[in-house]
Image (cartoon, rainbow, N blue to C red; front, side):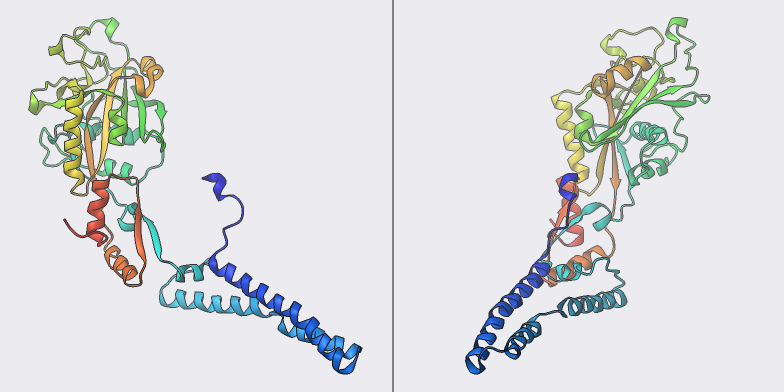
Length: 387
């Protein structure tokens, strides 16, 4: 794409039309000058006056004022647009292109919608309301060093609803699940890119969080790897999924100890007194098998059809060196659930699209969101009939 943007801008049909008119007048000149000179010679013989007369005819046919006339007309059109529509034209030659427009391709986010995302729901894979995913997402948003876009702002601005034990939005204190004296440090980061479509941070508490019930050998500082991104990309690197306390999960107090990825009922190995990330978040885990993935797809489609954009959140705790060496794909993360964000359409979008359609302009939407979310927005702005 970068290579294709280099070089000169492609010529528009207006540019080609002006060039064609100039070439036509040049052909007339090349034909008329010799023809006039020939007629003058046959009539009066060879003379300097006949030659000068032929040259003057050629000069008269040359459209030397054409660039000036075109520029003045385009400038007048730009002034009219700025006064009547409040539009500033940067390139005058874009005005004819605008007038010839018959297909307009637009982005969804920020063009049809307000680009002011708001977290509406924090759900587990099974579709139950639970604040675990949003609490982890807030940790990620607080410590990631990338651009603070609308999604990051929405996660940080989300607040707890009702103050209950199972909030649908995160607590105002993003470290409420940790010990009060926990101070986190970003020790490594896997930034977002459009190939992976996910971002991760590796957080470690300063000085560690010793567990009083464990031996000194198990009280070394642990780290927390938190990931959020597109559901398909996040689930691709997850081995288990979170089951909230409503489904029988158990809660323990300390996140920063080895997360072996298995609940205690499964008989997984682990030191006595260790607390998995899932237990600290008020539940336990189960394998993310084909049945669980199918249930996740049902949850996603159910809310995507209502126009909510999903973001998956996953995490795992363990030794910081081990997690950093294993990376995103080898850390055996646990899927903690999905955040569903609302980005309502702009109030002016429907009227603008209707006006374009009356003028014969077909509007196409280009977006990376799911088909269900895009379809819902298109129905709201009048691009598709409501279903």
